[in-house]
Image (cartoon, rainbow, N blue to C red; front, side, top):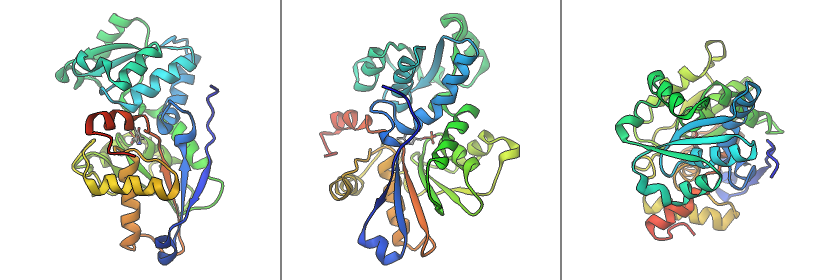
Length: 302
Ligand SMILES: *Cc1c(COP(=O)(O)O)cnc(C)c1O
């Protein structure tokens, strides 16, 4: 499978959009690769290229037992012929789940650490320990969000071949939103929909991710669409995801993209967007997570 950075942008037609006089599109980064979740590939791309150019043969990164990033890093590492190590939060009993089985099958070496130890994932002392244990490794932070990630996420904006006003994305670490912000033209705005509770903390994280010289007032967070927190949900969200797929043919995942698209529809209903404006929703992928979600919750997602 060749790794590339081109994905289609498709129009979404709904009576609601006609009524509210907005045009809505979806950038299908879920179609970039069957295994490497859209925005995770965007964020890994320049990390892998940088690591290879600097003589590294092994990438080490961090994530939870159901992490899209771990899944993507394992697959991207394999495609790049780079060895991969995943530092996994929690107990080894998760090693058999869909995400981690896939990562292992890609050749990723999994190393489980306690929740307490996992909290040290940004600490240099812990990184030194890991280098001692695993040898010469290029360390990519959780979610892949660092300065190399911004460069890849910027290409999302460059890949939208027409003028638009708003670019909406689900936010976990905020790395994708940060990169998008650096690529927008004058007058365009990026809107992030945090999938974690109390998502306001991301304002700070995002500001820290963007270099001083690239800071712009062209992004904001809509923090009211977390549905109780990470991987939490209710039946209206599930119904929305299933109905959306039925009407458009486009699958959404319940952890990220489902919440963002739900939020965009709700904001359109509430006249949040300027009339005659063009809104692009970014499909960041994450569809591998549906299998695990359905295994845990009884096939709610159709
Ligand atoms: C990780 C992920 C996100 C969040 O991206 P951040 O850059 O961490 O904000 C959004 N959507 C999907 C599908 C993801 O896997």
